[in-house]
Amino acid sequence: MTIFEEVKELVDVEAAARHYGVEVHRGNMALCPFHRERHPSCKLYADHYYCFGCQAHGDDIRLVQELLGLTPIEAVKQINSDFGLGLDVDKPPDMAAVNRRKQEIAERKAEQAKIERIYNILLRYYTLLDRYKIRFAPKTPDDEIDGRFVYALQNIGYAEYMLETFNRFDKEQQEEIKLEVDRIEREYKRILYEWGE
Ligand SMILES: [Zn+2]
Image (cartoon, rainbow, N blue to C red):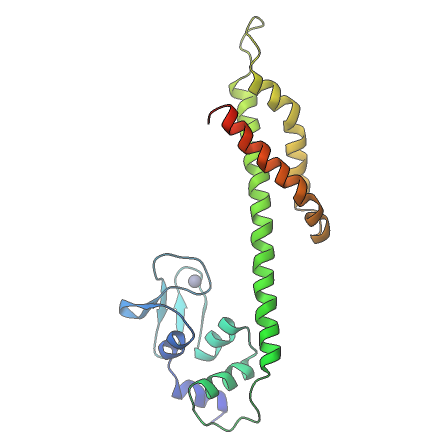
C-alpha cells in the first residue's frame, strides 16, 4: 500500500473537509470552497467529493492539496501530521514553502478582484453614457438640448476607449490607469447624483 492509499484509507473526505474549514451541511452537502455560493452544492462521499456547481472533484488528498495550495506529497504529509496518523513520511512539509504558495494564491485572487472591479466601473460608466446618448437625444431640431445628451456625446468615446483597451494592458499599466479609473468612478457617481438616477 502506498502512503497515498494509506491516507485515503485512514481519513475520509468529510473529516478532511471539516478539519480544513469547509462548512458541511445536511446530507453531506458542503459549501464549495472552490467557487462562490450560498447554497451547498458540493457532495462529500466517503472516498471523494464532487461539486455540482463547478465540477471540482477528487479524493481527500486532492481536496487538501487544493485548499492549502500543496503538492500531492505535501498534502499527504499535512494530513499525516494533522490527523496524527503516524505514517512514515520522510519529513514534515516545508511550511515556509506552503505559506509562500498560500500567499501567492491570495495575491492572485486579490489582483483578479481588483481587475474585475475596475472593468466593472468602466463598463457601468460606458453603459450609462450609451443610454443617455439614445434616450436624451433631441427628437426635433427645435427641442432644447438635454445636458445628459451633450455629456454623453462628449465622453462616450473616451469611455469606450478605456473599456476596450483595459484588458489589453499589462499589470503595470493597469496599475497606472487605476488612478484614472478612480476619477471615472467619482464622475459616474456624480452624474447619477446630479441627474437623479
Ligand atoms: Zn464548486
